[in-house]
Image (cartoon, rainbow, N blue to C red; front, side, top):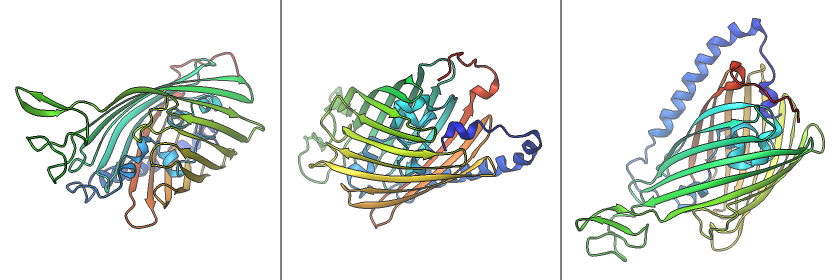
Length: 357
C-alpha cells in the first residue's frame, strides 16, 4: 500500500463523527511520545555511542520511514521521498505539509523541521525540507542544518526519475578538556571546525561542514502494485562520514490495505571500510484510517540489529504519526520520530494538473 492510496480512501459521512474521539486520542498519544523523547535520562550526560550512531549517519526520517526500519525507498511517496528517493514523489498525487521531531535519549540528539511536497499541481513534482538539530550537548556538542529541494518527473506511467539538492552545515564545539591536543585556552583544535574568537576570547567554532551535494533516483513500476527503485545519495562524494555517499535501492509491494518492502544499501564513508545496511518493513491498514507498521534493520558497520514499530491516524485533512526504533543489543540507540501533517489537497485550495500520469 502506498500512502497516497491510503489517503485516496475518503471517509464516508457516517464515519466522520465516529473518528473525532479517535483523533483526540491519537493526538494525545503523539504529544506524550514527543515528551518522552525530549526528556530522556541521558540529557545531562555525554553520549557513549559511536559518533556514527549518535549522528544517525546524517539521515532524516519521517515517522513512516522510521517505522519501516528505513525500508521505504520504493514506497516512500509523500514527505518521505525528499529524504529517501526523490523519484517516488510522483507515485501518488498529494500536497502535504509535515512538521517533524526526531529524538534519541542515548545520543542526546533532537532535531526539528518540516517538509512540503506537491505532486498535484503539475506533472513535475517538487518538495522542500528544512531540518535542524543538536547532538550530545555535553560531549561533541554538534549542531546541524539540513536543507533539501527535490524534483521528480514521470517519464512514462511506469518509469519515474528524481533529483534532490542538499545543503548541509555542521558545527561542533568539541569536548571539554580531557587531555590530548588542545590550544592554550583548553579548546580541542581538531574535534570540530576552526576556533572562532572575538577580542581574543573563544566564542565558538566555524562550521567544519558547509557544502552542497545531491541525490538521484529512478523508480520502475512493473505492475500496479510492484515498485523497484535505485537511489544514490550524497553523489558529489564529500568523502567523509558526516555526508556519507550511499548506493542502494528497494523492492516494494503495496495494495490499498497492505504493503511490504525490502531495502539495502552500501555506505562508502561512515567507516574505514565499505559497509552495508539491510532493512525490511510493512504496514497494515485498520479501520480505513489506522496504519500499523513494523520494521527491521541490520547495520553491518555497527554490527547491530534493530526493531521498529509505528502507528498513525491518517484522515482526509490531516495525519498524526509516531514511530520508535530500538537496537536489540545493549549500547544501541532508541529513536523516536513524531510527525503532524496537513493535506492541502483536501482543502480545495489547490488545483490538480489536467495531465494524468
